[in-house]
Image 1 (spheres, rainbow, N blue to C red):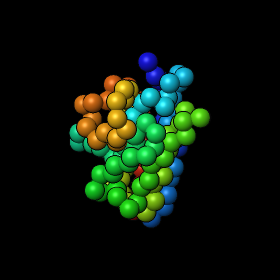
Image 2: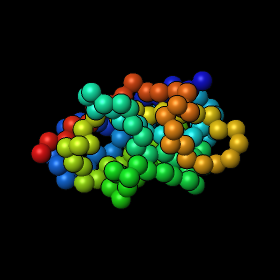
Image 3: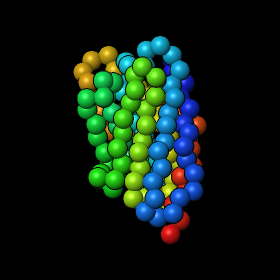
Length: 127
């Protein structure tokens, strides 16, 4: 199993930046594909970005492509989401997620494939 703890959320003005971090427990972090999802009030949780277990493959939602980047440090058991040019529509609770990946090395975008979730961190973008 893996436990995930997000940090780095907060309040920022439109056009600003935030960097979210997700710290994972366990010794097999490099076996997990990782993802970021978000959920705004009254909406379903949606995919934001994902990274494969090696970091060699990444995927982004169309709404954040070119503004957000995802990275991981397998030596430190962390994954980061760098968010630039934030807009009010990016306001949501952001969740880190993990799924063990025994074969292949690709980014997973399907929420239903993830087995482990963090508690979430609030991101609020003011206009």
